[in-house]
Image (cartoon, rainbow, N blue to C red; front, top):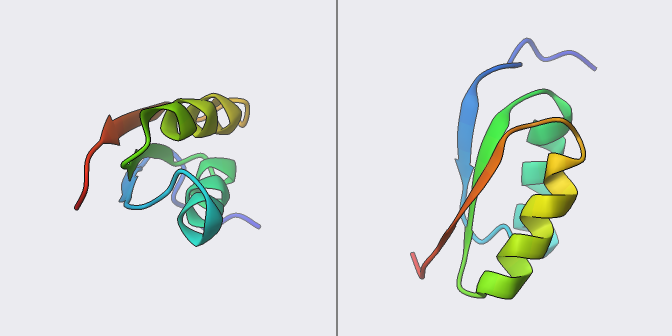
Length: 65
């Protein structure tokens, strides 16, 4: 599915796992560059590496929002 959002950026909070991760993954597969956030640095780093396999640019920020 092409939503026409390729190349845009998105911030997804609480996205190291679960529903937040699924949202970030869907956006990354659409070509969106994502910034993910969560409290656990190790989980975020692992999630970012997996999401980067989609070809999207992925950054992560550790913090409690």
